[in-house]
Length: 252
Image 1: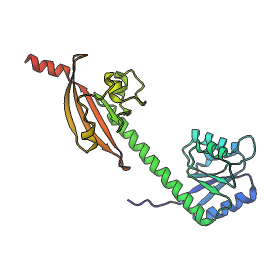
Image 2 (image 1 turned 120 degrees about the horizontal axis):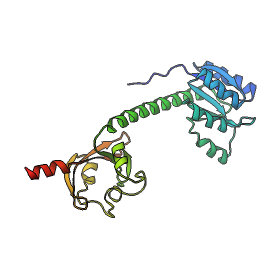
Image 3 (image 1 turned 90 degrees about the vertical axis):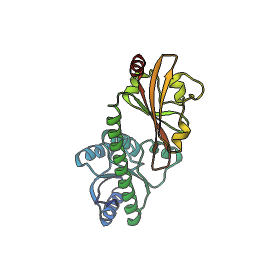
Image 4 (image 1 turned 180 degrees about the horizontal axis):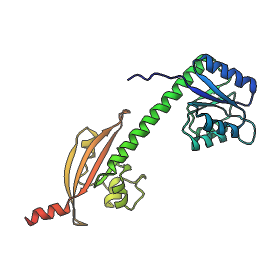
């Protein structure tokens, strides 16, 4: 489905009045709407709260007690509004500071209408895509947390990168680290004998029953591939304790 770009309501934060007015004119000519101009970080934060713009253009070298980067940090904490930095020149140290706030782009002043239109459309598209991804992740999390078993994702390096609440409660370990899953789960220094990583990475779903003699426990293990749009494949593990069922079968 194609994404139709909407008319964006943009807040301009620029302490040079002439540049700010020229930028607002360019925004309006590009088919968007400049809904406000602020020259100070504190007022910009209040304006963003009151006006709720779709996008903020922020001068990096804002004068006053708060520069553009400090203002952007607060906006990032208090709102989910995408931001584009405006700059005439910035040294490497300043750019590194700016990156921490995760802007949706940089525009070098002075800018033309075509450059502005392109920057706005890219920022809005990225923001919309990230929101859809976060919503999808939230739905996935809500589903997997209802599973009565350990469900977790393992990357090609056998590192656990995601787990449901059941797993977190069962495993007393900071699992989101560089240790391999066999180390975290079974305290082994080498892959498990029943490891199905190669099959899963090739696209297969594998079901296995595994017995852990150290704990006298039977597990049902479902390994299935999860492929991202980037092409990266993860091994989704579902590990369920079936000891009671197995011992019942033996008794019968």
